[in-house]
Image (tube, rainbow, N blue to C red):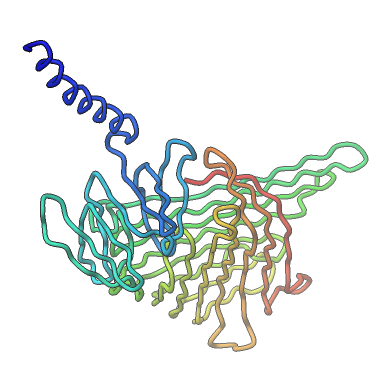
Length: 349
């Protein structure tokens, strides 16, 4: 009788431990869970949500981008942070994604909160977006060609940009150098350096200042210096798409190699745009800077860079670009428009 009773008690205990073991094997410890609207489930970890997608890291495919409107629920081991448009932060471990609203439930029985979809700026924001620390990003490109034989030719192109970003501050810098030689004679010798500081008074509006130095030997330009205050508007700012525009007032000083020097007040402008296409396959970009001489309204100078970037591996990026430089008041003997076509290989971080 005792042995029969003992075996009867042991079977439920065995079943309990077997079921628990199977559950532990089926669900990785510390995994977040996404329940899709079609009922399928994904296990991994929530990385970041911005715009229309959520970055989710899986063991089988790395980081994948999931369309936000296809997600029904999220269960997270650690509280997710939702940065709202008014800079408040809502956190929770369970999220129900309704059509127009999100229901965010906290851990340990904390009350749920309902927030509008349009209020959410970023899910799991970086520290700098919350006012803690800063972010540095940049890119450097290099193109070099050398030809020997019937034609003796060398071309060197280097350019790069740097952005230092905090919640309310941004510093940007850009530089480029182009030098070409043909049959031991220099045919192109020009460079450009510029920098700007922006202070954000709202999420979109900012003010600050900028400075720019330019040299182009074969356009008779020894040095063009332009400095001044600016005001700008950040239309979009995310990994997927960025657009900013700015203008202001500037003082321009032009020192020429052979002709008379000049200085004047000008109306400057700047446009910066980039957008990823086909997921992260390629990025279209367009950048334009220029100024309009307020003392001689027929004098306009502008430069544009338009191209496509193709991210490769380990931070490497290939790009194809068209650069157009225009100067309506070009020196005598120099053309008003200079166009350059480039294929570049670079590194970005």
